[in-house]
Image (cartoon, rainbow, N blue to C red; front, side):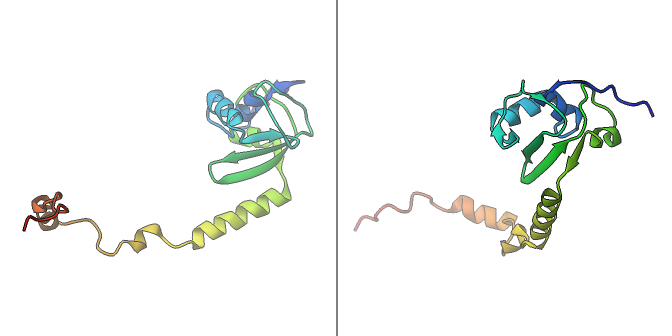
Length: 139
């Protein structure tokens, strides 16, 4: 397997894309703009230059991660090489596992539906219903 070329400095949005946190650079820029990515505890801009040892806090949907930058790359490569660019902190791994377990044990939202979808007969009854019947009836 060919090694990825390493860089001396790389933009935050490009690194997030190369490390496979986001599918495109545009998505990375959008998430950074929404404040979902911070570097060393400070809000960041897409053009921020990263260096090894920086700590990134980022959110992907409901998943929050904290990673330490281990290497820099301008090129998006295969997943194993992308995973070599960072190391997730132990606290972050523990929080993600706990969040996944709580989501797994949460009740199924669909189980609260008792009747389910209306049948054809129910829809016909609804169509005949006079939705303007809330008016006061004349005496």
